[in-house]
Image (cartoon, rainbow, N blue to C red; front, side):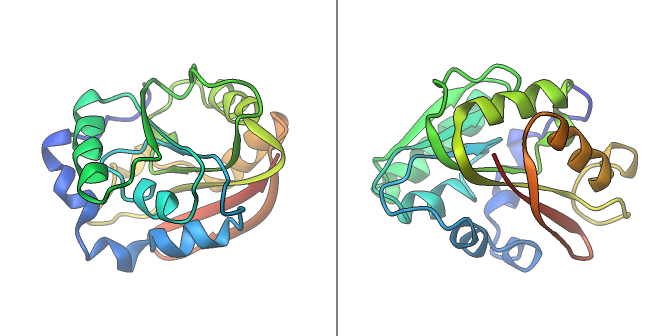
Length: 188
């Protein structure tokens, strides 16, 4: 692991309503433009800030992948409370995800890529699991000092990520920057 892993004891920060001003999970989910029965993947799902909005927009399966069993447990409780029975919890790192080839129609990887040791391997996994011509988004912290997020030295240059993604068959659709975060929308 390159960056420090998020502390599950601070999980409430991830679903704080103030977070919506930083990044609107519902807007991101809708921007991916998947069908109402699509299978989706949330990488680094944590306690479900993106997973639950994705699950509301599809009758298909939503695979919530996280390396922290405690975070997946919190997500499982939240999913039960929301009657989101289409969410599957998968404990795995992003370099080796136990899903079949061409399983998902869209994916989200939010605030997790900076924690991955071998990003190229993770991007290859994402490409392997996603169906051809499907859409995804990588969301990361901008390279600026901020109140939230990892230390500045762990934040990734978006141009570096775009090049690594391109080298693994993930093609840039759109990059959106704001003060604290950037989003890289891509197609397989």
